Each structure stands twice: as C-alpha cells, then as structure tokens.
Image 1 (spheres, rainbow, N blue to C red):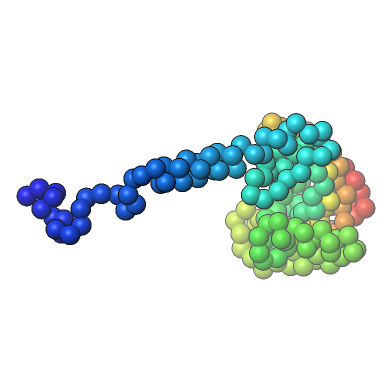
Image 2: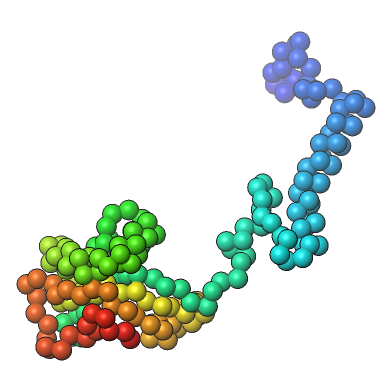
Length: 191
C-alpha cells in the first residue's frame, strides 16, 4: 500500500498555502522582520555606557552581566558545637519558605533589633528537632556577616572569604551544655 492510497481523493498532497509570488514576498518580509528584530539590540552597544538601557523583549540581562560588588552582607545563623567549632545552621530554623524569602525577613527583623528574640526561638527549635547534623550544637548565634565574593567563588576556605561577623543575638540550646565555659563569640563581638 502506498502513501498516496491513504489520502482521500479530494485532498491533493500539497502545502496548505499555494506557492506563488505573493507568498514568497510575504515569507521574505517575515524572515527579514525576524532577523531585524533579533539584530536590533546590537545598536545599543554603540551608545555610551551610561545610555545603555535594558528592555523587554530584547534584554541582555544585567543581573547576570553587571559587575558584582567585591563583598556581600548576609544575615544568617551560626551554631557552636560541643567541641567549639562553628558552622552555619540550616535556614529552615528561621522560618518556612524559600531561602531568599526567609533571609530577607530575618535581615529586616535583625535590623529592627530582634536578633536576640530570633536566637532564642532558633535555640528552642534546635532543642525540639532531632536533626543528626545539629545534635551537638550547644549555642546559636544570629550574625550579620560580610563575605568576599572572589575568594568564595574560587572555593577558598571559610576563614578566607569571611571578612567580618557581627553577632546580633546569641542563645544557649536548652538541655545541652557546652564542653567549656568559654563560649566563643558573645553578642556585640565582631570577628
């Protein structure tokens, strides 16, 4: 059985629009318009840097192409373990939602002076949850840290890319005792 036998007798095997001079002109005009629209953003590179604007739909995405600052400030949690080591705690102790949404809310609250309240609540949450990674955490710090971007992106050690830590709140985890009486980083201390 051939392919022509499957077609009904009244439907010839042709294109849906007949080929003619008008359709060729329309196809050429449409192709030229699309090529022009795609190449149109090139003209913005001829302008001085201060006149370059980003616009939809021909965006060059400045969030990816813009120059990054050399450092960023991040408000987050640090946990002091029984052996005295300090490690970041999971953001879910701060609240529900995505990482960036939680960090924005915490940053605002800490700026308003609620760092100690947050530290107390997180310490209670750590005591009530049974996460394997945090079983040896005895103290919680809410910190505002200044981190260097280049060493972080290069995979450097945490001590290398951390340039400053401001403790905004500290609390002991209920029911857990530290191995030593000297708990590192007290409130107001900077590293």
